[in-house]
Image 1 (cartoon, helix red, strand yellow):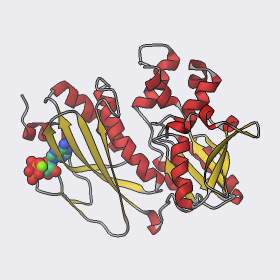
Image 2 (tube, rainbow, N blue to C red):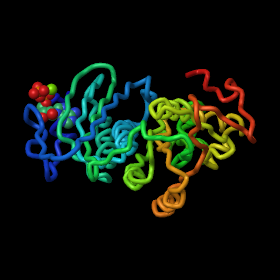
Image 3 (cartoon, rainbow, N blue to C red):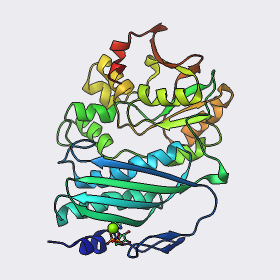
Image 4 (tube, rainbow, N blue to C red):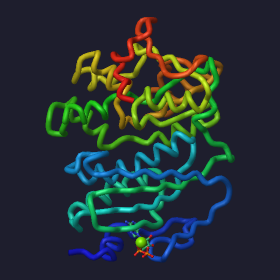
Length: 313
Ligand code: ADP
Ligand code: MG
């Protein structure tokens, strides 16, 4: 049985990067920072936020990815993370894979793990990320104006479909790809940084487009209109379920970790250039309107709410 100390030393203690004055191993971490600090924390509970038998590599990736996604939505640059891990048992093979998923993603975005906590109990993973605001400027949910276009990055509905269909990597190519999207969401950090000076407001899609765009609307003091035929759906999602269900997953399914943002119409070309440059689809799906709430339109007609499934929220 590994002790808490052995777990930390074997799996989580890495060489600290520049800026880390005191890293893992002391009572607290110390970093050298100036300027605006952007901080986010999220907990993933086994059986609630991911199936408890999920590949541990994917749990490590997702725990960091969902937090990086929050920094992406702020247009911030991640720099450090802390990790509070509650484990039912000290399983070496599980820890090995979990750490691999976590550190692969951390390395891609130059994030240093600077501390954490390790305890025994029902599986739960809390990651906190710290980042910097470039040029002291961040994106918030509150900056949208009536008339701004509403965009999303990537495709919507894939992660929710993977969970609903109990997709596994061993099934059809489509199911495997949906499962991969759920298991390894891509935080849109570079897109968030590129959109930082173009977008008026942004949020990441963690709970579902309608719910999350609803938060942006409330904080921006307006409503939104979504044209459902514009929703970006992956070929895999369209192959796996009916058109109606695909739209439902895209509107209400969580776990996409794409960015939903708004921008004045005059910035449309600059937004398209970011998409081109990054090789990531960025799709205009509607606009901010006067009033409140998110209303979905199909072929110019408002959709009944029950059809859009968002009565769940
Ligand atoms: P304390 O009792 O002072 O809280 P701990 O024994 O909990 O100290 O942790 C010892 C060191 O290991 C601390 O620097 C802490 O930040 C770090 N640490 C503990 N668990 C983790 C973890 N899962 N990932 C990264 N660092 C961790
Ligand atoms: Mg501790």
